[in-house]
Structures are given as C-alpha cells and as structure tokens.
Amino acid sequence: MGHSAGGGSVTGRAGGPGPSGLGTRSSSGPQGRGPERGRRRIVTHVSPLSRGRGENGGVGLSAILSVAAPPLCFGCGGHAGEERALCGACRRALRWLGVASAEDRSSGACELAIWAPLAYEGPAAALVRALKFRGARGLADVMAAPIAAGAPPWLVGGGPGPPPRLVPVPLHPARRRRRGFNQAALLASALATRTGLEVDDCLERRGAAGTQLGRDRAERATAMMQVVRARRRAPPLAVLVDDVVTTGATLGACAAALRGAGASEVRAVAYARTPGR
Image (cartoon, rainbow, N blue to C red; front, side):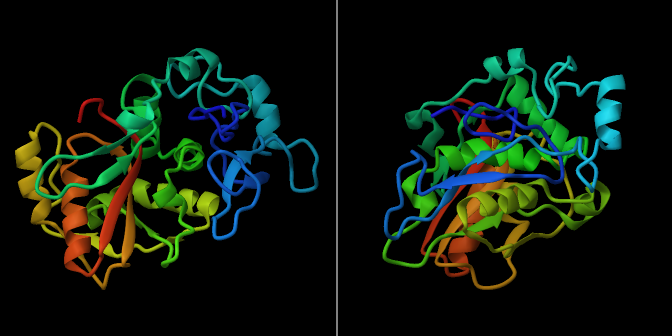
C-alpha cells in the first residue's frame, strides 16, 4: 500500500488542500481487503480535488489563477503541481515511522498507545505548521489520510463492544478565538469521515493560555494536568486525536481526564511525532 502525506490519496496519487470535490473509494480495513463482518469501512482513496471547476462544471477562477500563480509546496515553497500539498522532492523526504516506532507507549504516569505514521521533521513539520499557523484547513484531510491508511485494529473498531470515539485534544478558548479553529478538531473530523467513527469533543482547557514551547517534559506534564478536564462523561473507548506528539505530556493529561470521567480504555493518534519520544 502506498502512503500519502502530501496529498489527499493514500495510494500516492495525492490531492492537496481544498474545501470540496472529494471523491472517495473505500475498503473494509487498512490493507484494502474485501468486506469483513463487523469491520468498519476505511476510506483509502481520495480523488484530486475539483477546485479548478466552477459550479456548472466549467473552468473556475482558481484554475485560471493556478496558471498565473501555480500551487506552491508547503514544504519548500517550490512548484507543487496541481492539487498537491507537497512537491515530489518533499514527499520523498517524508520519514515514515515503522510499526514498532509509530505505535508506541508514551512514558510517564499515564501511559497509552499512540499511532503516528510520520516523524515530526522536515516536510511533515511544515504541513503541521501550515495547518496550525497559516490557516490551511484543507490540510486536515491530507494529514488524516496516512493515519487511516495504516490504522491499527483498535482504531478501526469492529470488536464485540461499542466502537471507539474520536476525542480531539482541546485548545484553549482564547487561542481558538485568535486562530479561528482547533486543528485537532479538524483532524478528528477528517478522520471520522474516513473511518466512520464518531467524534466526541468532551474535553476542555481552562486556566491561562500559556504556551508549552521551551518547557521540558516534566514541566509540560505538570502544567497540562492542571488545565485539562472533561466537561461530561467520557466514552468507554476513547481515541485522542492531535496533530503532533512531542513530549506526550498533553496526551497524558487528556488521557487522565478521560479516565477520570469514565473511559475504560484510552489510546491516541497523531499525524506526526518527535522520534524517540
């Protein structure tokens, strides 16, 4: 199976950020096997986005503008090609984590399994920054594609119990107002579309909207435990969703809050993680 992190297709025929025109083809699991009873359908292909077409199927303004100003790569600023988030060189530079590295257990007081397909560096880090700080909301689906493509069994669901619910890592209200969105919620929504799972936005941040930049793991863990809480009962099976994992302190605090609110099992997914963390 091919990977896609710089476009909208998990088969390597990538489509870049864009708000509409998603055509999908689905299979029953991460390896594209035929339907299996109890398995959830995972969307494993997204056709190129139709931002170049007008409402009546004609040539749209964006198609004309793409000739005058071709789409740029979020990684290097070079020519990315129509409907792509990354150029060919940046897509080849992505560092894919093996299964043993991608699905790991974070250390600390609140351990949990984490699925992250890419190392947080280079072009992958550029996509995270573009979504978070440049308002490139269409990248949420681009980033959800490799998560769904390599989805572990516990994310796919299909067991005898209720399916897990996707819980986005909360953003402080003040920061959300300034940014206009929570990138984790966008990623959870895109992942829900691909997996058929429901989103349960049951966590919230409180207290001061301080940054985690520059803090070590212990400082982050202490700070996060004081500001994350559940605003209602948590789902029995919860899968936390975030864009990136660095120290794991944020996910640990969120997992503790979910368990305190009734979750019996908590795991996590992210687009990228710092290698070795």
